[in-house]
Image 1 (cartoon, one colour):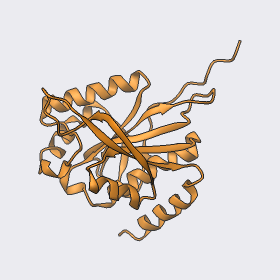
Image 2 (cartoon, one colour):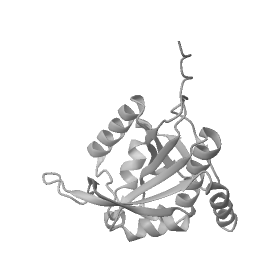
Image 3 (cartoon, helix red, strand yellow):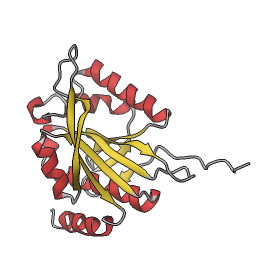
Length: 211
């Protein structure tokens, strides 16, 4: 009989200079309600909860998915502890017989309007990528964004992700009416373990140049 797999740890902090990624919890709800209450046009093609009840459901759904082993969700927090958005590991794929994933997707990312275009997003991506490649030892990290989302696609290209193609009718479009869901086409980007040393160097340099 094969030995049991070691326990996979779903909750941990990732800490940088500009952002602290904390395991998502109900204690983040009030901050997230405030973070999502600004100019919602800045969220573009990203679905973001709207109001306290919506945010409570959003957090509860992610915590259930975490407990099922499907996602590893984080609150994106400023150094003072204020949560200003969310992100997560999702689509955890395992090809080797081990607890850690071999491939993951980073997604479900959003930030308050006043936290956008700050070092928070760059550093959060760096922390997530570094943990995936250097702690979990994954082969690949991918990102899947609405093909129409030029801002998100440009940000992925800036961090060194490679465009790999379009997944047609891939997920529900974030801007579709709730009573009339329709599919979106997703632009697929990825970073592999071969790419990571160069990508890591570029991200470290960008963050070092940020005051």
